[in-house]
Length: 509
Ligand SMILES: *[C@@H]1O[C@H](CO)[C@@H](O)[C@H](O)[C@H]1NC(C)=O
Ligand SMILES: *[C@@H]1O[C@H](CO)[C@@H](O)[C@H](O)[C@H]1NC(C)=O
Ligand SMILES: *[C@@H]1O[C@H](CO)[C@@H](O)[C@H](O)[C@H]1NC(C)=O
Ligand SMILES: *[C@@H]1O[C@H](CO)[C@@H](O)[C@H](O)[C@H]1NC(C)=O
Ligand SMILES: *[C@@H]1O[C@H](CO)[C@@H](O)[C@H](O)[C@H]1NC(C)=O
Image 1 (cartoon, protein in one colour):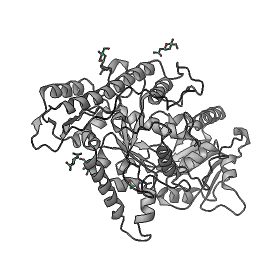
Image 2: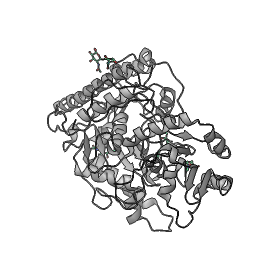
Image 3: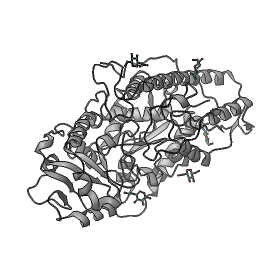
Image 4: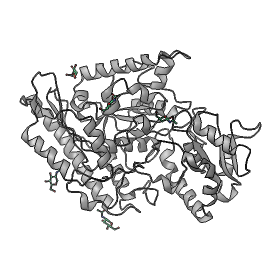
């Protein structure tokens, strides 16, 4: 078994900080766009040098613009022809959209004076990291060329294959590259319980569990910030809500201000935030207010990798740089015994939902289907004696409408219970859409089609259903929580999404 801890220590110790910075973003995985910008305490800023200006123009113009793929899927396929450089790997479908987004927020490209030897050392260090990333991009791109159905890489644990992967071979290569090279630095600033801690029970458990796993430091973590590819901001919005927000009150500002202070502290004390304007930093939150709280720090909101359950694309969730985090309701904190597997033939109920009347989508669903049809069983409260879990296991399809926020723990509950998830939401970017082809193991129903649910589901043939069921069982591993984490499980797949977003940018000192 390949251990992610066995990482290459290619680079030597800490180098001192230089104030001079230029940063380039190459977005997404195929150099879609670049931002060059400048920071630094020095007062004089010079215009971008000819060399950078040339690179900028060259990378920018070497792509034909493609229209944005609305499903936010990484398109590993058939891209060889338009990939002019080994810096690029996988995706080009986001081109146009990213260009728009980045242009909208482009600072004036410029460069400041470059001189000291400290600068050169650091420059070399970062350059070496970036060279390693370039190689990883190249190797992933090569692997991705080899078709999508089966990985050609050996792996004793698991070899991704099948149509539920956008590109199985590309994903596998990328996963192996991540294990080899990915390093995360966790900032030490901040005190528990709001930092370095989090709840492991409740609907927000994925937040607490992730923070705990990073704190334990058994995977991907480096103590040397100069070796890191990304920087983790270990705050828990769930804990901040608990400690800073007065229930019933309307003042959520204390959370935002705490975050702003925290980023101020981090960016003042360490060179890394300013170097990338936060682009190689990530935060993670499962709380509904995760996105809102980041809005108090424009660079965190607009540049950083935000790993969020509330992945509402109408509220600034940006699939080109952010990561959609699965929401998992761990009622007891227990992680065993969640997975059940009655076969497809022992599932008498066509579709099932039970949940509070949160939000307009559920309202529409219940209005349309409550007590209307034996096949479509929807409840705002389950009859006494009926167990929620057993209903999941008795149903072919599980309805997962958005509630007060886009994500629903039902998606992962359905995946565990091997009940095909029916996603009913507006503006939701489902988790792991960067590698998983959701359409192959779930059904998306537009809100306007709620009334046609029965027609849509009955039109799926038995053969097709069994195929989806088989695929669902196979992707289950990416949603499973293990303590300690196992390869390809939830923790590592979240990490992989963060790794992919890091591959999407290039940082220059
Ligand atoms: C791209 O490939 C060429 C030759 O294969 C190599 O010399 C160059 O360093 C590579 N560039 C990057 C950024 O990896
Ligand atoms: C592509 O696949 C073939 C056979 O399936 C294999 O021999 C070859 O090494 C693969 N190439 C890469 C770059 O993985
Ligand atoms: C980063 O930039 C901010 C604002 O420009 C500045 O106050 C801070 O001192 C800089 N941090 C470092 C480490 O120089
Ligand atoms: C993010 O960038 C956009 C475009 O520049 C800007 O309008 C918006 O206010 C920024 N968001 C935040 C939270 O600062
Ligand atoms: C997603 O964001 C939009 C825009 O703010 C909002 O109208 C919508 O209600 C959100 N969706 C959910 C399910 O909260």
